[in-house]
Length: 445
Ligand code: HSE
Image 1 (cartoon, rainbow, N blue to C red):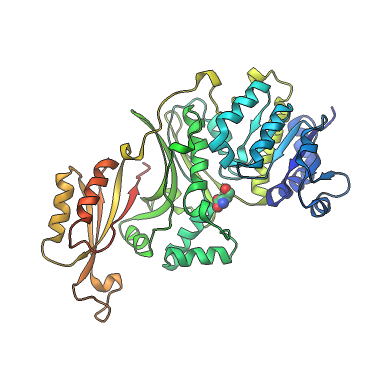
Image 2: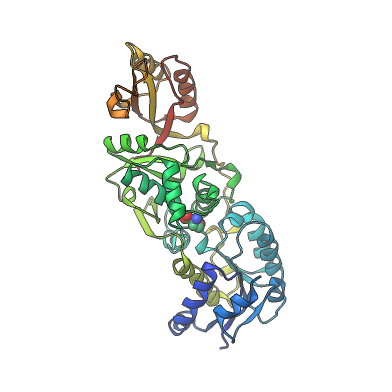
């Protein structure tokens, strides 16, 4: 059978990795897919550079629409990113009857419903293994490997940039801003790192996993998103002293009232495997009712790791190309007519436990007032730690007139709305000298 023909939109880091791995492993991939898979056209604004990368046998154009219009092309790989021109081209490729492979998490998290509906109407596949956790086959695991399970929750380190920064903060006792500069100098963080450090990239990925795990539409607009920019070295140190690590987690959870979907820094017990995922690595824990806890670990970005996921999608599509569209694996794991309308809950309804750090005046009765507010709110305290002035870096010279101390409180579970109200009350105490730091805590048991 003639090889399946692929057109590649954008040959940057992931595109060139895809081209190279596909060429290097072509014989093995063919034996798996049942026919050859060939990238025969590439669209890139820098035609000369692209041609140099792919060699003379591949047609390089600067107009992506030349690929979409070519009737010989069966699959279009979109590696442009963002939801501007990428969205237009993906919809045009679908309308032209092409299957689409994309690594574009932002596009799917925000416009997935429209794109999947267009693909279903046209009878083509949209595959996106590379959109979540790079080389880790987490989409495949959720959609197929764990299909017997009622998924209970997913918690993932799904942004390598922020995990690298947090690892550096912990290893070297750095504050966020210093660790970010270091990550940028080493090429782990982009010049504009906003999407990574503010948690947006992780929220795109968590949104996609949530949809597949629970059979709900992709709803990025309902996700709670908080990044790592406000974390200090002190919080990482105190968490450590209490037996926890701080990680930026993407969490989605089924609870009686609906679905939680949230990204925020989180204390997790240091003894959990996921707490020990360091540097730019990614890991996802999935809890299913039948299988129990499973953990997936690997590189969440990079040329060939991400290419590994893109090519897995190419092989899937090649195998299913001639199958009746109704019998293919559904885009979001559940049949389109069997999606659930479970609501994604507002953050104020989420129940979790908390780490609080209060910089207070070291005066009689302060701790009693603080704990009294928590008690009145019905919030139960799990542990309290008080750090003296010298331990928080205030020596006899830098110590202000009113002696200060850090009070760290771990709470048991309570609903976020109650904690918001209690924090507002504590913040209003004259003895509380700085904005209170609140970090959520998950035992992931
Ligand atoms: N910027 C992402 C990360 C990789 O740092 O993990 C692509 O999503």
